[in-house]
Length: 356
Ligand SMILES: Cc1cc2nc3c(=O)[nH]c(=O)nc-3n(C[C@H](O)[C@H](O)[C@H](O)COP(=O)(O)O)c2cc1C
Image (cartoon, rainbow, N blue to C red):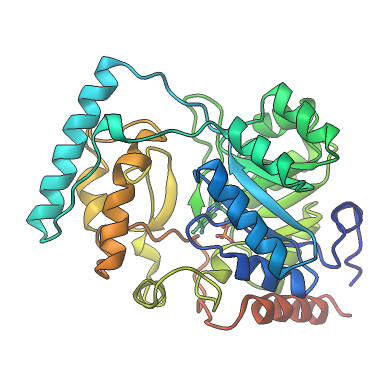
């Protein structure tokens, strides 16, 4: 199997396999372990404050001298209105009461206490640290950010969940597109207003391949050689794996979360807006069941900021009913091996499966 292609050349990697950015799960150690076996590691910055972004970028650079991507959320921030503040207060009360009824005491922040970071601050932090590969999700970068990053010689990887989103990314000069299928774990990268694409990964990938010219990475359900090769057949040059690494030695998930993962059944895996206000795929629990179909879901990122403390307290107490465990539709053994071993096995198995 010949791995070398446009992506390996552009990104300076040996294998076009990308360790998915997984905010809350990926650690600098996971990124480093991916780079050690010649893959691309991705460091998620999520909604960290800019000074914290710089800290984790430096921590990763200390561990690895090989290329890795940094990943940011480029969502729009809804305007603050009196109505939003009222809804926030009501949702806070509802969630606190719900937790209390289940024996979990939590004091969620008032609206005035939360702070929203604009992604442009992340862009500045990334440029100051001279990171050369940036992937992003939840939207498209604004023109000024694209310009700034490109003048710094940065390769840009945008995420799409529909053909239209892929076209928007390509026409604004994004270098590589990550096609995220419906089966993927975690948040949808979707950004067409008012529309949640529910297209299966393989249908989407082959249509995006026909619609744009830039190289494609595929993400969603890759967990062994056959799933990787299927996406290769449909035009992907890069293969992004997330859920496969959730149980790994370098994952930030606690042991009780990994144990929950290993008991997961098909019917436990749902799409939910309840934790963050954006749809994400993960394990159904008491919180999701109680909040999903209520009016107590604020637009992203406010719901996420509201529930941050809840998830923190639940994690500290080992309570799987009030935290988000994201994962995709391809159930696997969530191996506790190192990220390097899991990725190396995938490489070896793919070479065998493809005949060399
Ligand atoms: C726990 C978790 C967290 C994630 N966080 C991010 C993130 O911070 N940024 C991002 O672009 N994608 C994120 N994703 C989506 C992944 O990048 C990728 O699209 C997905 O994992 C691929 O599907 P798979 O889980 O079936 O491999 C996350 C996925 C998971 C499972």
